[in-house]
Length: 287
Ligand SMILES: [Mg+2]
Picture 1 (tube, rainbow, N blue to C red):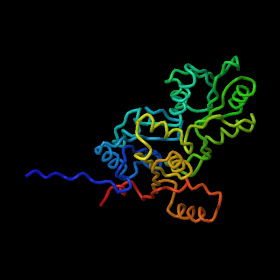
Picture 2: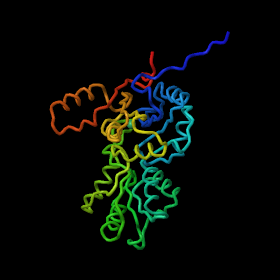
Picture 3: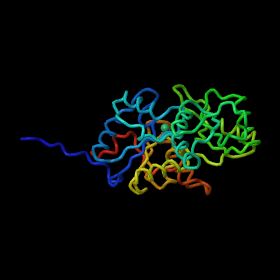
Picture 4: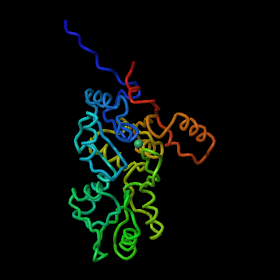
């Protein structure tokens, strides 16, 4: 007799899911360690023909780097499974202008993504007026010289000011470091100009791009994230099911406190409250 194991069922709230979007840090891994169950759950979702996409605000690494990183955790992916704030920015800019000349405040991941879409990175512009875009992302070598060039391109040239994302902090192994928002705000201050576009979470733009590319409607999609003011906010703004996973920066108490605040404050953004809260990813499988 051959025993056939029944396919594990997803919890009722996710029974109609065709697309699962995962934040990376705090959901799939923490630093260099896989978060328990993440690999098995992703395998299970794929077994059930659910499309799995990874969506990170971190613009410092390329999609290829993420493929290699997940390979170490025995999670097989392709570059096209990743939507980083750098790749989303690059894809959108390509729709506006081909072979654009760009001044970047950002790291290798952002520069290489832009170059892979055919754009040219100008590091020391001789003619300020030839720069089409100034794009700002996290740059751990950020300095006054770069800021001054970016300022000049915007104030004296015709460059559009775009930001990959505006995260205030960057979680590291021991606490927090400045996020890309610190660089974006430096440029806002010295140009008295806000970015025309911001592509990362909590803007819903990236999720809408994913829905469009995968041809899945919002009601059949969900996002798993550990941060309320980026992942959950973006998911709710895009109209997909938002699931907070408590394996990263958010605790149950933080969510309870926020729910109390939502009842007591008129200006509270209800999109910060997740549709579902789980302790870890294994809880999406029915017992
Ligand atoms: Mg995260």
